[in-house]
Image 1: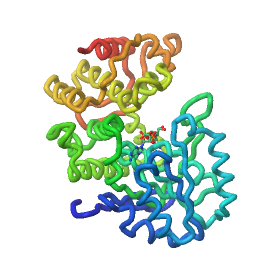
Image 2: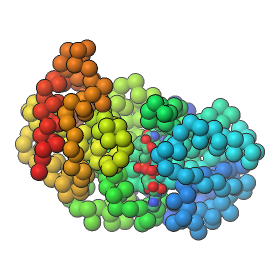
Image 3: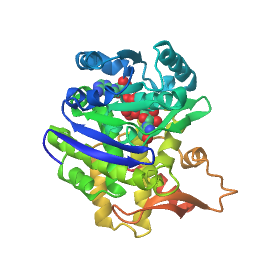
Length: 364
Ligand SMILES: NC(=O)c1ccc[n+]([C@@H]2O[C@H](COP(=O)([O-])OP(=O)(O)OC[C@H]3O[C@@H](n4cnc5c(N)ncnc54)[C@H](O)[C@@H]3O)[C@@H](O)[C@H]2O)c1
């Protein structure tokens, strides 16, 4: 890696695609070259992102033959099935065919939404992702998972639909609010904890200010892209190994749903979940005290788990859908047996989990 842009190739069952990473790559020609091969191109941009980056997004629309733009309210509440149907009708109104393409410009909400409608429209048209949050750059734009929410729950309706290209222009990060940046850091550190030592080193060697430097953040994104695509290549449809990417998420999702998605970011909730798991790993002797301390320092240095939660353990367990009567006092988790050594389908005693949650809730 290095130079103006980095290119990572992801290999999937439905073909290979490139992830282009760098400053200014939105208009560097790679995306336009790919889009030339389509009869129409609908660009769906988050309305917030369009507000900040109108000049570049309009320039892209102008450079693409058959290019058309539609804006999206990218609030999580609008990432739903009814709204998806509305946009499928927009695609039809704008005469998109099976040879057309959709470009999704925005954070994870826009990417999940755009990927979902592209995966459904006429049984699937090409989708190009332009992630604009750190979380979308290091995580959600990669791997082909798309989804919308149903009133019954988050991400219930979804399809696997791999992108044709991901264009990660770090220039977008300049307007990203600090708490959204931290949100993405949590998912990136997760990749370090479950496998990538270079990612861990970037976190150990920097602080909240220096990690945002152009070159450092680009390296961090590159490492996450390489790591996540390597996991997805080995298990595209989550038959086994891909589950490691859910490290911290069972507890994180329980907390988000318990708090009704208010007052806590996804990244903070996942960071809390990861901390609980790491405490259990320390208790079981899988991580020694020095390693644990080094990792905990990262959580506080980058404010990964900023929220102080006034929750109780039983409520969290209930939201994890843990049932004391049917689960025989054990619970199945992704764990780490050492920094960078994940295991999935690991049975853990619930008493250990309860203790680790209690300690994490009470931490200073
Ligand atoms: N498909 C997957 O594999 C996967 C993985 C993780 C998360 N997700 C999904 O991703 C979503 C969360 O994604 P997210 O954290 O990117 O949130 P998001 O898309 O809601 O973006 C966060 C906020 O930042 C704003 N924003 C985006 N880019 C900006 C920029 N460059 N400058 C200023 N503001 C900007 C957005 O308008 C929004 O208000 C959730 O719906 C989650 O379910 C999907």
